[in-house]
Image (cartoon, rainbow, N blue to C red; front, side, top):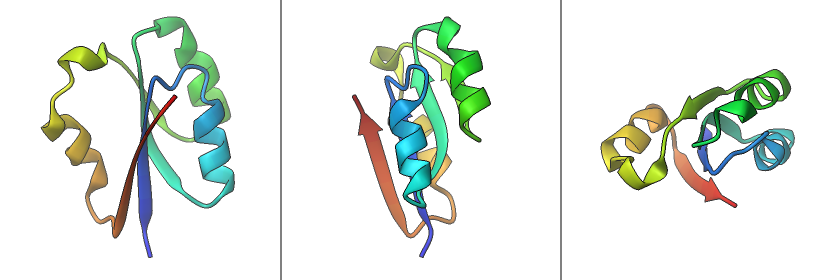
Length: 76
């Protein structure tokens, strides 16, 4: 079973790291703070997207979930 997640408000990637340790494929993290990019991408094999989520469209999120049996939209 393929489980994929997208992390909103990802910051440096603490939640992403925990999800990945649990076997969940976090494919992207969104955050408005560009300074989090290095830590997020260095510690997690996922793409950091510098974007304000108030303008994020559902289609953008859904595009990350191709070939996924289960989808998770996380944020903290």
